[in-house]
Length: 511
Image (tube, rainbow, N blue to C red; front, side):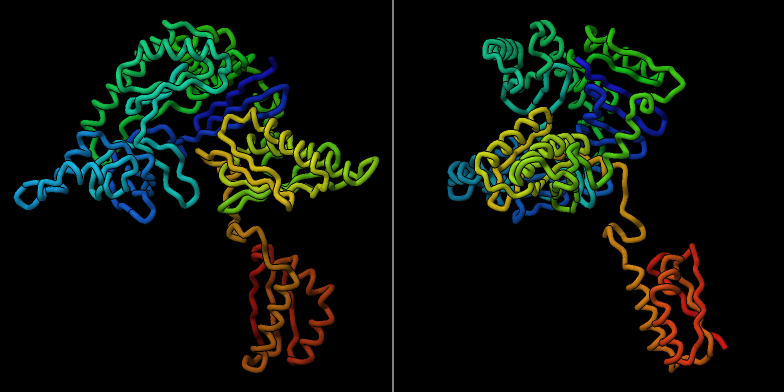
């Protein structure tokens, strides 16, 4: 067991690193200016219902409205009945031709439409299930979940679930029976992986805490203005202790004394058996520097990732999906081409699984492996990829290799990727990732001068450009400058300026 949790806390940013055998597995950030929203509960107002998309937009008080899909809507039975009665009455409040019961039953079946469930102006209680990402608002759900150390409470769902990672059937059955005996009728609970070996008393204590929390949320919701925040989830430091600090973690190290004390108190309450694993780091060398995390974060932002063999992968993210390309690079192999390709692909599988988790890349992902003709190699690669992704806590779906050597997969996305968190679009190229070449800018200047030379007087032309453009104009394009001077009867003066954007220029005509 060599897994460590490292917490670098500061007033402006908290950073949490999960490290295994000195390898950075996950990195999480929280900034007061960009506080995470997943798990927060709001009273919202429906502002638009879209039957064509089977969704609604809900104002919860954020900059952008949240998106609520029909499957995430929960309406109490009595409320649905009241709406059905209202819809199937005439202007005098009488049932329409005695058809109320049959019509309401037909309309509110197992798969009701979004406009059967919601209407504009309706007030509802919602929880954020996915952070706002890019231009998209937060993803909302009415199916509230309240996580604790050992249990996840679903107050509006009649269901008992056991973590899939608890594989012992006897243990699963024992936990299911314990929860069944303890839970209030009509409520739901999911038993988390860390609860595999805990006692019934511990489960009961968690359940009691969650039930009291839900009562408090309901009381707060009743007096909260719409739209408004009803319940804020734990901050990232405490969520990390709740979700990641398990018996498998060797040590939790934190470098801020105040946060250390708060965290230690939290662990004493919810996981006292782990309190001896918490260490306060007070050395002069910064915590992340001491463990090499800073350099790992920098490398995690690179598009090109080298493999030990000499091959490499390229990671490109678009608005809709992420594309990963595998290349042999400097790796030439020892025997034949097929073996070289297979070894490169197999090494890339492990690295891709690692990079997806580290960078928190979600959504649709396309992996372009090097083409392999051997069917056994293709099958072995697919199995290896599935095994490599098993350590990832996010839900993953991987399809088999296509005829073109492509693997299509999805990885659940609930918050921003590392790239979205730490980077922003280039203000030069506006996120396009490309700029006009120096030569293209140079020729654009030539064409502009040719168009205006006969219309504008003066014998001298001063051209102010970026130094890199000036360099190519004075060297590789010097002959064309000379021809342009002869053709226009003008004399050109080229002035390099560091202040100029590489694709901008200024032309000044003078006597």
